[in-house]
Image (tube, rainbow, N blue to C red):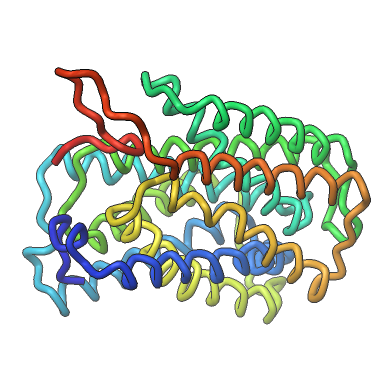
Length: 323
């Protein structure tokens, strides 16, 4: 927790890959945990509570273990952290939580695998020129998403509202914008302080929107399974995995970090099938495989060495700005 942005750039490689490994495994399981949470809890209020509790615990941990100085940030850094919190936990996770009332956890994870495809499109809009093979991968990925959307509901899901999968795709867009923004905006030097502000901002926004939308908590109706699932999301999904995600964004290229999007779905689908009895049709499985293949193609293309820029131009890999 004492690491600054400079410390992260010089940290050993195993630390970065270890943090990314946590994101790979834990986030893959959170889709199933969300499914069990929303069985008896209102989606936005439970999701907001998850991030507010985790953010408060993280603030306390940073203050006690590192000192209050680690929590200091100027207005620009605070504004960036709040904005990213509205994009990642609130927009990205909030829409997934709502959608999982009607979408199978495995299907939600497969749709979220589109994040690296969004990242490529966003970088192109920001003036970068991805390799041609990257654009081919995005096109293939869009075809896979079409198969997923047209394949119909997954057996074992809570419901089958037609807008559910589209809401997950919108969530992926928010998550992509937040991920790209986190590499371009001025943020607090301590990644855990950054993570805490993001979770507090995002969680607060989710609770406020939930209350305005009419969500209310009925403690008598909440099952033990939902309480256990919410506790898992707070401790592992937010405190451990979300903080690891924010941490690793400052150590590895965003295109490398985005590889979690094709590991998470595999874990989520397996858990959905084994634990929740979800069953996928041929078209859905084919669409999921096409999306994952496209993401792998995009990430591998982004890792290839890029040609040196013409004299007078500065190359900034993976959308980062010089610090």
